[in-house]
Picture (tube, rainbow, N blue to C red):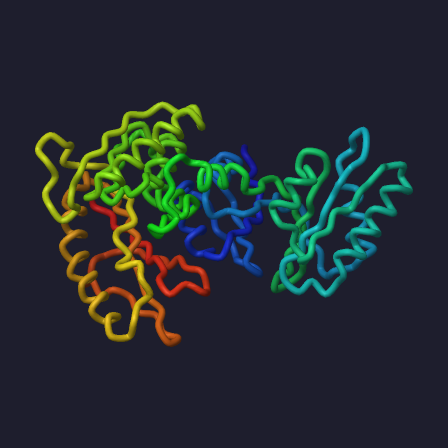
Amino acid sequence: MIVAIMHMVIAGNHPELTKAELLSLDPRAKMHAEENGVFFVEFHAPPAEIFQKTGGVIKAAEWFLDVPTFDEETLAAILTETLPNRKGRVSFGISAYGHTGGDVKKLGMQVKRLAQERGMSCRFVVDRSPALGAATILKNHLLEEGAEFVLVQKAAGMAIGQTVFIQPIDAWSVRDYGRPSRDAHAGMLPPKLARIMVNLAGNKMERTLWDPFCGSGTVLTEAVVLGYTHVYGSDIKEDALAATEKNLSWIEQQASVSFEALTFKHDARDPLPADIPQMFDAIVAEGTLGPPERKTAESFSKIIQELEEFYRVVIPTLVGSLERNGVLVLAVPFFRSQGEEHFLSLGTLSKERWTYARPDQHVGREIWRIKTE
């Protein structure tokens, strides 16, 4: 019998979107309570494979114990026993989530002292915040040459875990800033969000995927990295198609992936050309977000009206191009003005939706997922 291991999953700034991503990748996963921004999850699929596929998971730890309170002496003894027994110096860190009622730095120094009394050479790694960042963990090789412990304050007691996954920030940076065709002025879709959106379409990579607003090919790039082998991209701009083709050729070499891709000029409001497949298993895209210039009060309502008219044509057209049990994942804009959020009114389509935006952004993204039966 396989015993499921509880994992403590730390998401980024959009935890509900990350939760949906995880359940798309592993529909049989059991989500337990969220405590201080940390999800407690029992996975059915191999967790390591799930974490490597995600765009939203920042850190994940294996839970191994609950304790009633933050008692420095008790915790120090537990963590010292858990340190890896290896030759040479062991580096370790401790991250705390929620108000633990204790001093993590003092706890770390106590662990270091106890380890040294046992003849171990130790280095305690600290950061500016109570929780270590991905860069600090990776730079100090904590997962390979030591350990990071995670303490999560719960409604009753405190959970302790050991980190097993850190988001590979260098790889994400290469795919964002290192690709050959990148237009920082075009309101680019972040690669991590593109990854999340592709994952929201499901975990069957043998299917066909189409991006009808392909831009520089961010969605398609993430799709082929995940394992999609048949992808299609279209756009109304010739330079966007050229950028997509360039970036797909680059990722083919960069990630050593094999796939078939077809790009073509097309307006998403129109029927597909006769020489293009008419039906797709998944459609994943970021649609137009509106004019890039700063919105004025006078133009604000007009922009929303124009976008609503556009998407009322586009969405039914895209849904009509889905195979049975197909999935449309579409990012549409929402706007912030004078402390209020304004969402597009697009009818009563049966959909799931999540928001994605930084606190200082005037234009955010609303992620829609529509499934056909």
